[in-house]
Image 1 (spheres, helix red, strand yellow):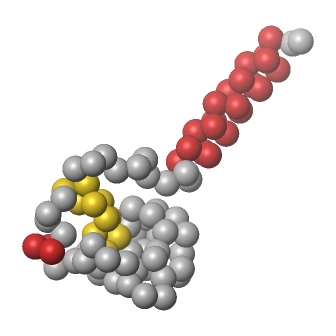
Image 2 (image 1 turned 90 degrees about the vertical axis):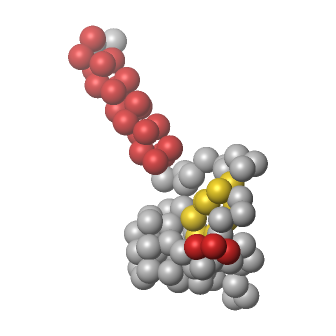
Image 3 (image 1 turned 60 degrees about the horizontal axis):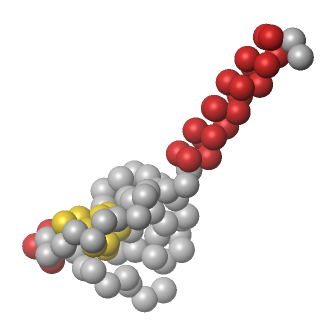
Length: 89
């Protein structure tokens, strides 16, 4: 195999894996975190909307949408004005 072709193929593979990982969403929260609905700012949600309006992190279209959530330290969600319960669809 041509050396340049091998290098290009290897580089393309690394870039593809990075792109897949970037769209996989956030890593599961540790035990000290909880989902807090209704506090995420537009473009700053941690994963898919509970209401089904979108399916990716960072795609919230408005601030404080009840279906969008972020991970926060346990016990802080209520203080932030959010809810640990997902809204009904």
